[in-house]
Length: 177
Length: 417
Image (tube, rainbow over all chains, first blue to last red; front, side):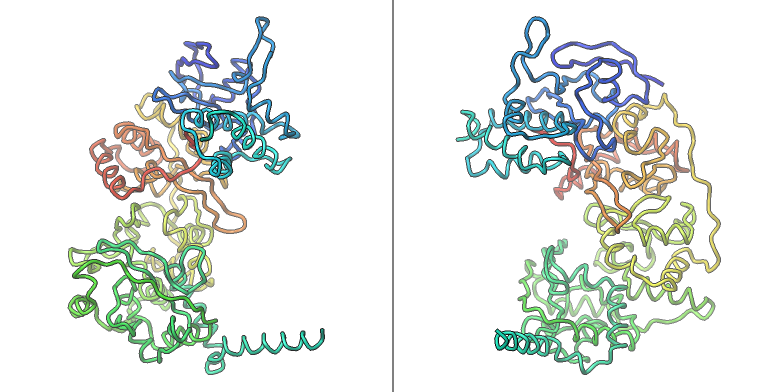
């Protein structure tokens, strides 16, 4: 069987397109849309390398695992993938990285990069939330740990990811009070 | 330096001699036997606070009458049961009367009363021989009039009797041992048997299942277990690994498996599984139910989009990630309760032993009552013998009950910012 779906990905309207029941979201992104930045890690919803963002109508953002969620789950939803964060020029080339991406580069947060797409998405959701609901400076460390605790990294041992997000939050006006 | 070492050694020796002073009065065989019995009785589960010292008490138990805290049962003379005589210990175990007076029946003395003398003595020997922990008992948060312990005397006069375990001569030694382990030590009925209006275990409906703390302790009567296709090896696998072809254990039962059932010796395991299935000979297994799902059924898309990533399009599951839905005993039963509760609450990741674990299941509270009913009916049709008669109204009632207890949405992985 198959489902006919529509969705908005990184601001572009996709569909209607038919997908078979076997199609998980990550496969849809890779094979149908050529968006290969989202990485397939454990395939079981554990490592969060494959997470994408869903912007809900109520203004919240959900972090969803694309390896265990069928493409049909995203029908009618607004989705952001790792390709959607940086600014691009008229030729479609990256002209400016997002603050989270830039911070990860500056702090040498990753080595092999397999988990990076997931970390970028989760950290972006956190930073955007703090812009709406700032926290006090003493809450930053725990907030970062809580937000990123589901994302697994096997190279750098988390320290540099956490450091990057923490420093970004502290230095960006409006995220802390 | 040498002198300091000597002082430390003598201090250490002194420390241990004080801690284990009473051990010498019991023989080691009796203590070892008591230790095994305490495992079979799962004493540690209730008498240990989260991250607390084993047997030092402090676990909160939420009852309809308020919060009870389990007590320190290490042999500390001030805060534990160090001053208990055997007679008093026996009285607490068999009659529910300790140093403080009548005990609340959260302590399963209505089951432990069936313990034989030899086992009660062995348990006493074990508890008196373990290291004493100095940890004060917490005051219960029980409102009037239930805070008055003499009231318990009336309840006990009516419902708690000091009775001896009686063997059924028409049954095998194995079956009788299983009966003793399940009903006396294991006190399984304390959760699995429904209680009547007076909170007494309803003997008429023994082991027929009971909702407790937001999950249903399953119907574990032989009739139901055999109908679901359980065999002795299935039950043994469930009790040893938390997992079998019929699914996983979750909620409080996963702790029972971890602390107690998985540590039963082989003959006791065989006794328990044979007793539960009421058969000393192997029960014939049933084929796994794996029909081709109805792709036009209303629950199909929900299953495909939100469940199949882990549980498989054909309901086959993923080893050490998510159990199979085919013939899954949680769905393959007339009661809807756990199917709905699992979907709404989620399940935290579970590690049963070094080689068996299952990953956390999300809460799917965002699904409507109708979507949940459709999803359950879809799974029932494909992978169970149950009729697809789940209704949104039934789901609504269970959701309401769980919401009232603040139990919805504990699963992880579904983060929202």
